[in-house]
Length: 111
Image (cartoon, rainbow, N blue to C red; front, side, top):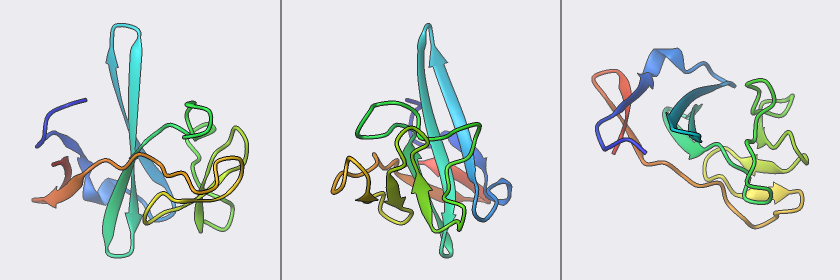
């Protein structure tokens, strides 16, 4: 995981209803963070389902068709965008792992 202040992306590159994915690799290990717009701000989560420890997305898609929830492509769990809380699926009550971020000079950065 990069240090605080690391720039994940430019805020304008995060499209409404989509996720911007940032991947980090060290040797064989992979760690992904996805950033989404939420209301007038942004949220970021570790790209890992709390049920299966596998990535949530399928070919870069994180959302339900109606763009109301984050969806796990592996087993269909639904998570609220604002707090990562699971409302449907085998991990009801679990949460996605939040990543602390802020917007600084138009960039989404780790804090």
